[in-house]
Image (cartoon, rainbow, N blue to C red):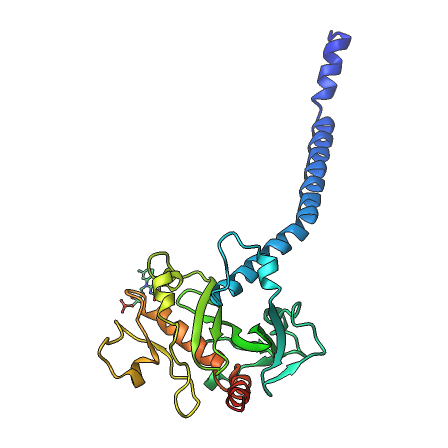
Length: 269
Ligand SMILES: Cc1cc2nc3c(=O)[nH]c(=O)nc-3n(C[C@H](O)[C@H](O)[C@H](O)COP(=O)(O)O)c2cc1C
C-alpha cells in the first residue's frame, strides 16, 4: 500500500498538475514578453527616427563624427509637398506624415500610371516630405525621399539636390535587400561620391540621369557624362533599378513639379 508521502508525490505528477503548471508558465512568459515589447516600443521608435535623421544628415554631408543627431537635425526643416501641384502643404505636420503608409490610403494615396511607373512603385501618397537645409535664410540643399524596385526588392533612400532642383549633392540608401558584394555596392562610399555634381534633368526638363554599364568615360563629352554614373560591376540590374527610381521621383509624377518651381524661384533670386 502507498504511504502518505508517495501518494502526495503521485498527485503532484498528475496530468492536471502538469497542465496547470504549463499553462501558468506560458501565461507568465507571454505577459513578460508583451510588457517588454510595450515598454521598449518608444525606445525602438526613437531609434528608428534617429537612424532616419542620421541618414538625412549623411546625405546632406552634415553628419559630424560624434555629433548629436537630434541637435544637428534641428537645423533641417521638414516640409510637406503636394506632388501634383508642387506646392507646400502646411495643414499636415511634415515631421510625422508617413508617406509610405499613406500610399495605400484611399483618400491620401494615388495609383502611379503604369507608363510612368519606372520605379515599380504602383501607389504613392499624394504628399511627400522634403527636408530643407538652409544657411542665412537661404535654402542650400533639398533632400527628397526616394524608393523603388532593385533586383530583389524595394530600395529606400534619400536624394539631396542643390536649390536648382537638378544638381546632385548626395544619394544614400538606408534599406534594401540587394546581394552583399553585388547590388549592395550602392552603399559603397566611392560609388555614392560619384553622384555629387551630376545633373538629373536634360535641357527639356525630363530626367536623364543614368547608372550606365561600365565606367563613365573620363575623356567623354562633359555635356553627356554629367548625366552618367558608373555601373555596379556584376549588378547591372540593381543599377538599373536606381536609375529608374531616381528618374521616377525627379520626373513629372514625382517631385518634378516641385523641383521646377524651386528652380524658377532660384532663377528669379
Ligand atoms: C546569387 C546571385 C545574386 C545576385 N545579386 C544581384 C544583385 O544584388 N544585383 C544585381 O544587379 N545582380 C545580381 N545578380 C546578377 C544578376 O542576376 C545579373 O546577372 C547581373 O545583374 C547582370 O549584371 P552584369 O551585366 O554587370 O554582370 C546576382 C546573381 C546571383 C547568381
